[in-house]
Length: 111
Image 1: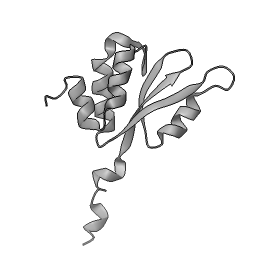
Image 2: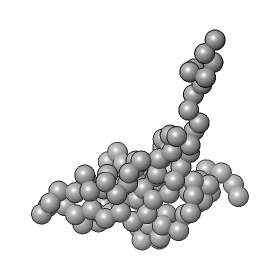
Image 3: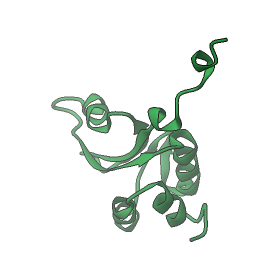
């Protein structure tokens, strides 16, 4: 019996970063990627739209964490994953060291 072939990979194999990027137009993208630097480069349009990666945090539950943060920031949402964030929110996001910090910051979980 080949039990090993049926086992799922450990969650760490699925780890992605939740990232915050800023466009040259002042909009912010909150997304997930295994390679946030590459992803931000893909979003840029040379000569039209520059993008800068501001911060990235490793996550175990990337999609769920992303959705919860998008929901918490809905008042700043411009479209889908794009936001017009005030400076204090950007600063707070950039101080987060992990997934727990992000979820605590927006009141999703209590400290």
